[in-house]
Image (tube, rainbow over all chains, first blue to last red; front, top):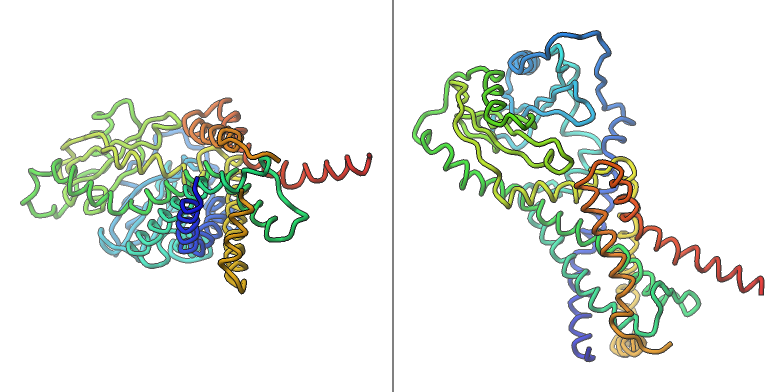
Length: 378
Length: 67
């Protein structure tokens, strides 16, 4: 590699990482509590327990669940019905004033056996909510998400350019060698290079999946305009229904359409994952991978009859597969701790990189210093 | 130390990257004993960092003191 090409890669590495470092530090710091959001929620007393009762009969019908939630929140419409993997006897119904609301959400937690309301946890408040919003969109909605997505892209550029620069800087060093007794600058540079290289795979995966996630809203909008529009074409000119049929009957229709799958979640009419005329009933597999891949079944919300069902397009499959790889929530507590440690190592890489630039910036002869750094590298 | 060839520079980083990448993907696909192996593969970068940053200098210091 020539000196001029090294300089070009140095320029690319410096500026791509400088622009995104502050935001990446913010994302790493806010991501840390989000890894343990379940545990922190439990610690803060936000977890709602399922009561231990003797129950041998069938589970409550979906209609009874929705009616119980509506009785608690009569001014709100249901949006999504889902359940957490570790609470199979609970259903959570999210609600808002309108089906296309972007804020003012409520959650009602229901007992799946009796349709009893177990609680209404605060959704848009508290420490975890602030961490979540800072991590996802900086409280700025879609523009914030896309901005952070661009910062993630810059991190990818910084990682790739960092790999290219690793070679010239390591020509005279063994793998893992940290020059501890030759000054703080060289020690910091070696720590930055070594740790950056060691966590490279993880950083690349988390950054790339973060970029994909930043596009999630747009991908869903594209899916609506593309596949959902095709699926509901016969309903295009019809007014939205003034009354809805049975949700339980609609679920049975979806289960008949996909008998080998189980229910993932239900999107109510008018939400992003359904149409104004349909329940979007999302079925899923039961293997570690397929339980994350949904298959939508659109059921006419007025008549509870089957309309259409299609596999998700590749871009939504990519989005769904990218989510666990970004959150680190797919391997139990061990993986969560590993995710946290790798996150901390990434913070050290970002911090050492920032300090290296800061110290270099305050040198009186920056050009001379750069020449020395390059000479050191060879 | 003599200047090194690219393959020597990238040998260990490449091994670590491949193993941890395989671990990340295997943990997503399997939910049985193989998940433990996957977690072990994901832990490799952490173990390598601990070894080189703390354990190796401590070991070398100890060796030189013994000598």
